[in-house]
Length: 118
Image (cartoon, rainbow, N blue to C red):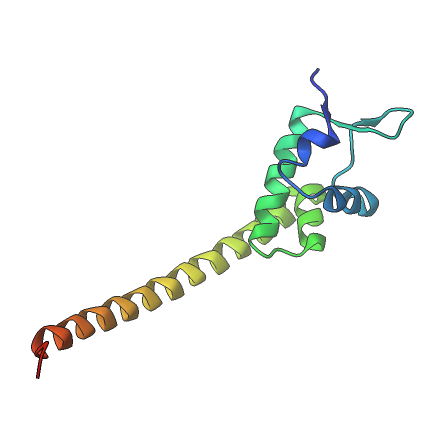
């Protein structure tokens, strides 16, 4: 079994965040040595990636913890709700992009019609 030191995980996350996640029981090391070094398994690296992805989507840590430790039905509902929120944000951003594209096109037309030198 591969073991990864906490230092390896610093590439993915801030050390303080990893320690905080350990304190609240969200993401704990597979083992600790006598010097206090934390070690993680490959499966845990995948879990960390999942946690960081959900956090990036503004999911509260409490909900992330429920997703990781809750039953499948609770997990499904939370993830489905988050997916719906993401779909709504994508639609909002798409609408904003269309508005910006129209404004750029309008400004281009205005610039083409105005003489460069009066």
